[in-house]
Image 1 (cartoon, rainbow, N blue to C red):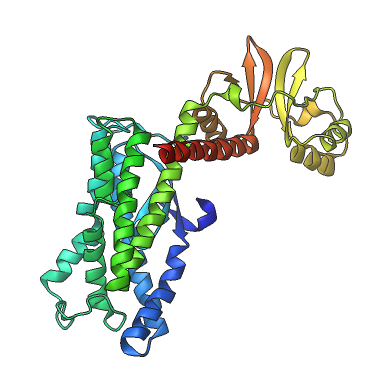
Image 2: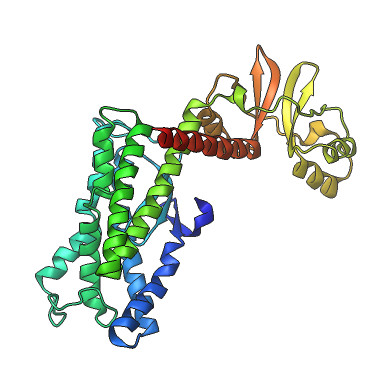
Length: 375
């Protein structure tokens, strides 16, 4: 998902990323304005984009507040022109308030329903109550020539569009939460995505014969659905795959008695970036290739034992990838040894974990698409 979005900062500790469709939006607005009036105003068009972005941020802020109450802590939010895609953070699951259970249908409905009370929509209602000189009823409602009116209608359009049962819009999320009561999460998501894709295609085609904004909305809904579906596939891999299926069993180790120069020489002939440090049959630490280099530059040759990290996590072969990922990210680690009967049998590094997750997610998606085609 990161390859289709760019980071613009953090909001309340949550990374905020902007999807590439937001960068197409200025060109689209310029084109529609020019087609309708024979001219366009670049600065005002960019200001309209900024208004839409601010409305989406306000909308997603409502979701974040509801999610925090439900114990759902997002790692990042990817903003699209009509909605946001939330990336959950497995390493930071907070304790929910009483009566709210993370992941159940009720919490999903609370999360999805938060848009109905978000700051953006409340602002729209206030504006409708009294906006002298703005002329809210004049068509077109969303236009760079009248930015104050666009603030009101951008919020109203956003609230209205999110009622559509097209996943991952709020109406689609509610639909998925209802499906989840009778089927597993992955199946519920696939069904909701399928309905969302159908609605997106209808909007795209309808826009070709009427308003091009409908086509833009359809493209955004389709793009957002693909992001959400991929996130769910990744989560399925995290929860169901065990470490023994992806751990590295052919790996190099170092001894605490190795000199740093000897350790660097061994590292040169290995693809590993991180190494378990073993004394006899006992694992006593971990050290990275970069740490070896830094120690050599700063202090000259010494022993691995003096610079290795003696604090590390271990996992059992039956643990899930989600468990390993939480351990890696919670303590900013880059390697987890896999042990059995206090014996080192494999290692999982952040690099090989991410690589395995990507391959497993893609293979599952291909198998599922193939099964759908046969059906």
